[in-house]
Image 1: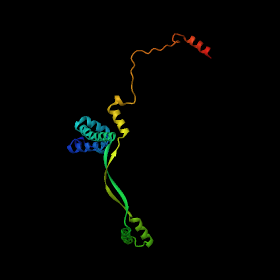
Image 2: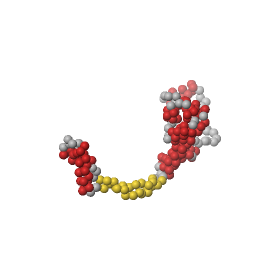
Image 3: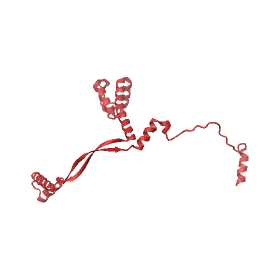
Image 4: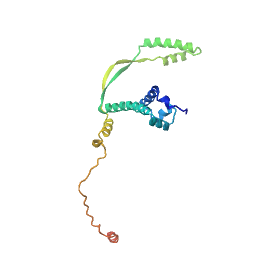
Length: 194
């Protein structure tokens, strides 16, 4: 791996590139690789030059916000615009004209081909149906329970975590009739029970 100079990466262009890599979701290790250094060198650079650390934070915060927004949107549900299509057959006359044209072009590229090979290529090479756009519809995407649970457990852990701790006040009184017996007395009682 070629050595890279910290000075090159503290220029406005270098910092912008680092920020862009962070915004693209690259890890510090991947960014270090792109720079041409080992990860430990990048960590040292972050300590020495606050502008490198800030560029990484700035780039990552944009991506983090996008993910947070997407998670929130998924948790509460949203409306989506969706294009609708229908597959319809192409008229036989048009298919036939296109196949003749395709066959002629294919024959020029393959002069030794038999007429059956030419015909098969034309049948295979020309579509007999097409997609027609019907329009755009608004579609409701329902809330996602898993996204909602994840959001709530992280945003309101005291209310939504799985483990609830209960604190008892006062003492716990347990009556143990064997508490004051010696080991010998306990063994004698156990043998009598057999």
